[in-house]
Amino acid sequence: MHYEEVKMLLERSSDFLEFANRAFKDGKYSLATFLAEQAVQPRKGCRVR
Image 1 (cartoon, rainbow, N blue to C red):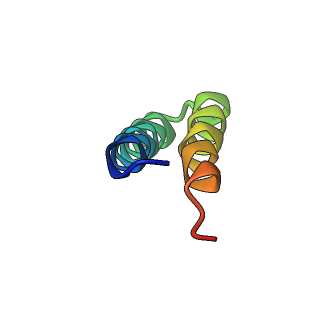
Image 2: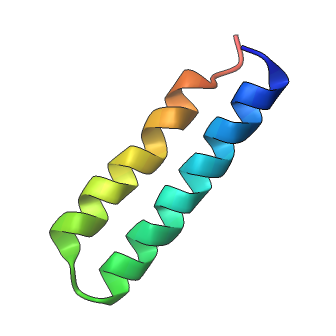
């Protein structure tokens, strides 16, 4: 992956995590769980090999 792609995926991951935290604070636990999983997915693709 190119640096720009990795940077974009990590930024997207951070956004999803922020949304998950907001949903959790609002008591929307199912949505928070879904968004937290979405936050993890891009990071799995950016592993250092």
